[in-house]
Amino acid sequence: MSSPPGGVVVTGAGGFIGRHVVEHLRRRGGEPAAWTRADVDLTSGDDVRIAVEAMRPRIIYHLASAGLRREEVHHPATVATNVAMVANLVAAAPEGSQLVLAGTMAEYGGGGVLTEADPCRPATAYGISKFAASSYAATYGPERGLVVQVLRIFATYGPGEREFRLFPTLLGELRAGREVPLSDGTQQRDFVHVADVAEAMVRVAEGHPERPLVTNVGTGVGVAIGDVCRWVADALGVDHGLLRFGSRERSPGDADVLVADVGRLEELAGWVPPQRLRPGLDIGLFESDAPPST
Image (tube, rainbow, N blue to C red; front, side):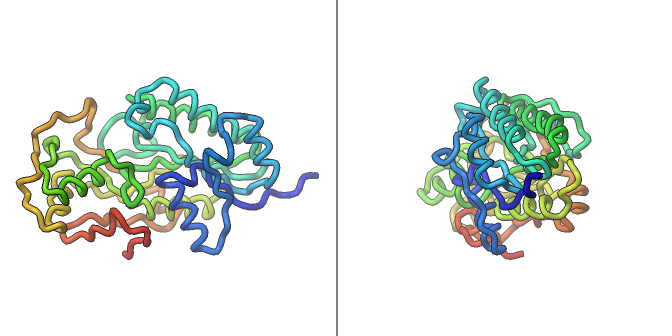
C-alpha cells in the first residue's frame, strides 16, 4: 500500500502569480517545492512523472502557463502546451492529492458579472487553452482519485506584472512625463491584487479539499479603468491631461463589464479580497513585494 502524499508543489514558481503563492506559503511556515521551467519540463510526461514520484505531493498549485506574452495569446501552440502540462500532472499526481489550477476570466469569453455557472465561450487561444486544460483535469482527475480545483482569476495586478500591461505602462509613462494613449476608459474591471490571489488560492485548497469545483477569484467590485488611471496620476502628482482617453481603439471583444461573482469564493474561503483600488491609492500596491494591508 502506498504512503499518503505529503508536501506542496508550485509550478510556474518564478512567474507573476506563482512567486506570490510560494511567498504566501512560506510566510505561513511551509516550504513548497518551487518548480520553474529550469527545474521540470511540464510538457514532458517522463519529467513530470519522475519529479512527482520523488516527493509525492499532497497539493500541486499549477501556475505555469503559455499564452501570457502578447505574441502567444492567439497562437495555436498555446492550446497544445497548456493542455499537455495539465494532462501530465493529472497522470502523475498521487491518488488522494489535490490539483489546484490557475484558470482565468478569459475562459468565459463574455462580459457582465460572471458566475461559475455561466457558459464558457473563450475568444482567444489563451482562453481556449485554459478552459480545455481545466475541463481535461475535471474529467480525468477524479477518475485517478484526484481532487481538482479550478480558480478562474480576474484582472490581477501588483509587483512583477509584465511590462506591457496597463499599470506598468501607466506608471512608466506618467513618471517620464509622457502622454499615455488609452481607450475610452469606461470599461469596468474586477482588479484583484496578486497577494490576495495567492491567499485565495491557498484558502480554497486547504479549506475544502474534498470538493472539486470551479471558483472565481476576484473582489466582486468593478472599477472603471479611467477612474483607476486618474487615481494613479493623482498619486504621482501628474496632470490628468497626460491620460489620452479615446486616442486608441478598444481591443476586439473588449467587454464593458468583467466582474466576478464571488459568492462561491466567500463560501469556500470564508473571505473575499477587498477592492484596494480607490481614490488616494498607494503606488506601493503595484510595486511593493510586501503584502497589502487591509
